[in-house]
Length: 588
Image (cartoon, rainbow, N blue to C red; front, side):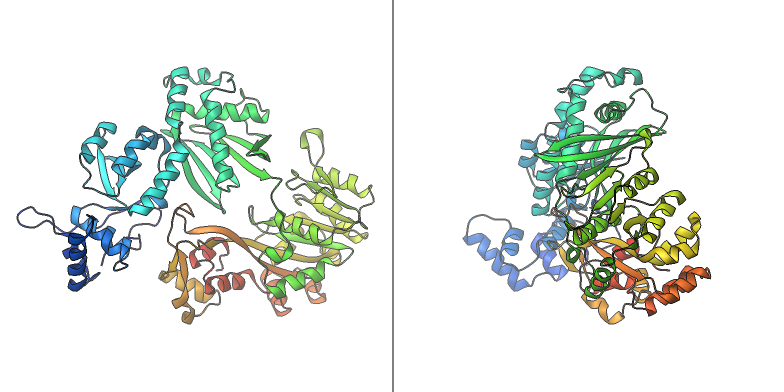
């Protein structure tokens, strides 16, 4: 049986999953959809006769619609039967972003009338998803809009409608803006001609504003504007994964980077050297700080925007996703009036959020809490916060020295990047201050050796350190489209190796991709944590330079619950998938 939902051999990221269509009859006639459904075993002959009778007696409706409304057959099965009837591939527009410039070429009213949505440009034409291939003059009209050729693909009606609404919302007015840009600059304009200063009503200004607004509405943490050979690709990082949201003409690449540089106060003439800056703006009344980074590539300057929403609600310790026993252990540790607590993990693993949440738990009017950050991401009205400025000579190390002269009780250091900062933080912890910070390391045990690699003496580290917290962020399966799924052999092997049981495989769930989750199958994230508490045995091992694996074994024996085990528990409960755990918390 052909699977219409992408569970066959086609990759999940593909918008179009080709199926093998049934050949027409000897007389060139298409097989009737009712007979196709019966042959597939989706319905019985009795159910077909009942639906045909209802079709004859009532208002004129399509047979598939009658069967779906009566809950006789799923909509996906009807879509697969229609695809077989017309010899078309199946498209899932919610699982792949449509090309905004392509969408802008087909008027919204025309798209609604044809029940169509252009998806992408392939070698043999434009792929257009349609809900009803029998619409009069469908192909003729589309080929007038897309003279390079049209490839039709069949999509579930409701999914197509939701994807069309989202696509045209993103592309609304974009075609006019692009044409206005080309009229001003000319697609054949030289690179130098595109660096002209723009006014607030210029097309390029509107494009950048739309990019930022789209990112905020999509809950994106980062925006990537990437020049390529034939286009400019715009991708948003949503829940830790990149998703393409816009495709713009290649001629706009330099103007886009120049506009962002102007907003961030950077040098628009300098294109070879990487630059960093900051934008302060507001979207829908919400104040935003946007960190800007530019870097030269083969086809132009790549621009990355990191969006910091200072008005975002802060979490409590109970909201981070820690298991109850892990949270209890962590609460006991942070009650100490002095010592060093370090959060370890890669970029984007939620370390800063954990630090701020910890500050919320320990701050009071009786203690002086101070921070040094790069930059200040969340603003606390009752905490003294300092943002580093390397151009002015204010680094983590110099800022930390200044803070120590301000009579602090609790200190947050945004990141320990070098031995100087590490040494000052450890000295602060040894002299009666409670210090919180982050370090880039793979897990809690590796964080200990990260300090040693920096040049910190093990005897100092073992005396100052209270605990290290290893963490990752795992995407949650979308509750709107979640359904049972069968893992691949590689996923099963990982699941068992990480502590799972084959008995649990029958209850696994995964999001299939829908409009709510932008076709990813995931919505939101949850943290998985491991808390390594320093003990006498661990201090001895650190002094003897014991390997990180041995440190981890001792910590587990002391009660540390590894991240992998917590992630596997999320899989058992159907909150995430094995593939997501493999992507974020891989264990060899």
